[in-house]
Amino acid sequence: MDAAAASDREPDVWDPASRGEVASWTLYDFGSSAFNTLMVTFIFNFYFVNVVAENTTSGTVIWTRAVNISALIVAVLMPVLGAAADYGGRKKQFLIGFALLSIGATIALFFVGQPGMAMLAAFVFVIANMGFEASNVFYNAFLPEVSTPRTIGRISGTGYLVGYIGGLLALVLGLGMVRSWLPEDGNLNVRATILLVAIWYLVFCLPMFLFVKERTERRTEGMAVYIRAGFGRLGGTVTHLRDYREAGKLILARMIYNDGLVTIITMAAIYAGAVLGMELEQVLVMGIGLNVAAGIGAFGFGFVDDRIGGKKTITISLVMLIIAGIIGVMAESITGFYVAAALIGLSMGPNQSASRSLLSKLVPEQKHAEFFGLFAFSGKLSSLLGPLAYGTIVGMTGDHRLAMSSIILFFVVGLILLWFVREEEGIAHARALENSYSADL
Image 1 (cartoon, rainbow, N blue to C red):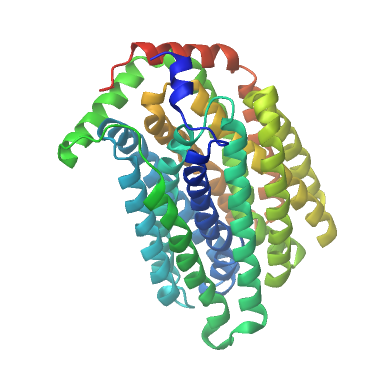
Image 2: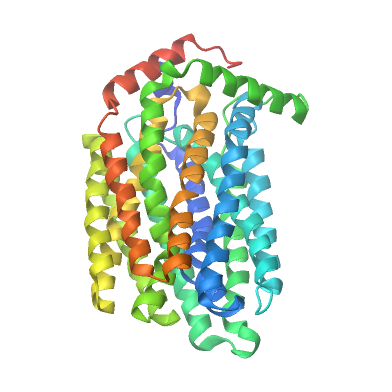
């Protein structure tokens, strides 16, 4: 199958027959973003460190370790499961299973996320976060199936835009709960936001579950066969790494710069509270502004991505992130930190969206779930380092500003590594490989 034929058969965002699938695919991001926004970034992490844990220092250490452990689990599982899903035509089945696991564990956190239960809450959070991150691997692998080479950048960007809107709306509702809608007895006003996340996640993921088609032929062998095939396919990829040289370079670069981005996102609320004395309501206002900026950046740069390419788009975003990191570390006022947060928002949308779309173009279609598994592996393996470094520095010195300063280096190193990715050559080679692979690969 040549590239032209592949493009002809792939759905187009402007084709009425495919609009439902594109909308359903983006709604998954709309729903799942509530977990990332309220649980990982702005409410539950702040609540865990300041209320559930014995003190903020021990809470920061426990939280970063929980993020590390869930990242390690995803890093180990996803390359093999991604390859198995490609082989068996089971991307959607894996997506649904992990999403429901995350939703169930999130509901459990409503009951165990209380003062004096830090270790149990951290354990349940690991399960919830692992399910969330794993489901995103298979969600990302559907991007080439709901787009064409000419629309992949804008559809990826639109997905992130819709996701940020979903996170923003969930955050506004969460802010209302925290402020005045619910009683504060037993921290019910904060804990109720956990149930909001679970319900939001489930409701808006249903269209993806029901309407997005998996176009890979489904096999009927048992799961053990899929797992063995997954190991075999992954081994074959490793053996023939030179066939995926440019994708490998991107994954390596992204492994570093994504570490910095993940750490800033997950630690921003904790940093703001510890360094600038921001209250939870102020943190939530910052989160609303960040999500607005991120949505604008993701959508606007989606068209830029289609025009100038993913590599240049990622480069622009990394330069912006370096500047934003410096502003944030140097900020002595809440207003200054808001400026840094807005710039981070404008940068992180195109960074994530362009990274996803570029990887899709650098690998043959028969390898998408596998490589997004490797994408997750690299991201989660690297995301061990950022939170670990942050938590270790805070544990040793108590200095959050010093800890955050160290994260800027991840963007610098990632930018240097990205320079070596040859985008056009990699895309051409990936299309050529599609001609030589059989449907079983």
